[in-house]
Amino acid sequence: MNTPDSRPPQPHGTAPDAPAPERQALHQALAGLLDSVAQLGVARGLPVAEVEAMLRLAYVQRASQAHPGLPEHRKVSRISTTTGLHRREVARLVQLLAEPASAEPRARGRSLASEVFTHWRSQPPFCTPEGAPLVLPRLGPAPSFETLAQAVTRNVHARSLLDELCRLGVAQWNLQEDTVALLHEGYVPRNDEAQSLAFLGDNVGDHLRAAVQNVLAGPGPTQRPHLEQAIFASGLSAEAIASVQPVVRAQWQALLQALVPMLEAHVERDAALEPPPQGRVRVGLYTYHEGGAPPGGPLASPGSPPASPREPVRARARRKG
Image (cartoon, rainbow, N blue to C red):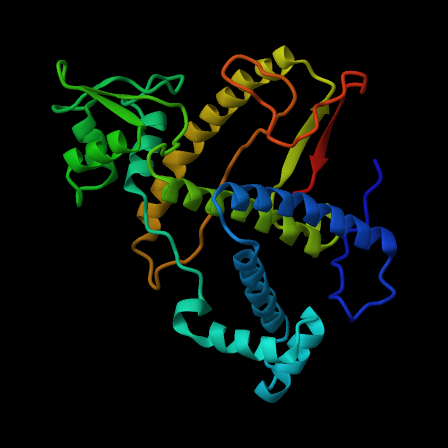
């Protein structure tokens, strides 16, 4: 398999001799990303002007970071050349970025409900050895929901965490038996769109950051800082696609049970360090499928072309990490 040239593209206006195939590949990659952005924006009524404003601000911020130490009287001209934006617009955005509310992205707070869910899915005695979450009595000694909540935090009452999980549609409280059960394999807050969108930004954002940093690091696999790989196959029936899902879920459950105790131990140990460490890690696994409707619902996304049944099956591991 040939390794494509993955040198970082030069900003518009600074490299007129950039190879056409490389620029075309960049356009195709961005078109795929922006298609999903447009799908979400249209579905939620977000005008294109708001997206364009955010993109302009992000371009100016990155261009400013690309030229550290540049004198203020030269910064606007350099950013204008790098981004292709008019100097007056650059000056306005630079001033906007200097305001405290815009200079740094807002960090999303700790989600205790998500942590309780993860602990429930991965930690004995609240799940089976295979990782299936147990139906727990609400009160009493472990395993109970009360002790589960206390294992995550003692600053919030267990009843408050239970109410939040039930509000999100993640757990169910059986009042007659006074037991609590999880309703879903994954933490998907069905009754809180703001939290769902925050997870989308966090998860997809970090995945995209990993992929972009790998491309900018150069073509050598040893130079790339992040593990970012995928397996792709086409020409599959709906039944074949459905057969993949249990395998992926089992692999995710094994990863969950291996990593959660390790990370919890690291967090507890590193909390005593001075100064407090600022490092973070996100480990994810995803699947995407289209074409066909196996049990559990349709697979094709709106506007996506169906897979051609005449296309030969092919699978490959894309090593990008």
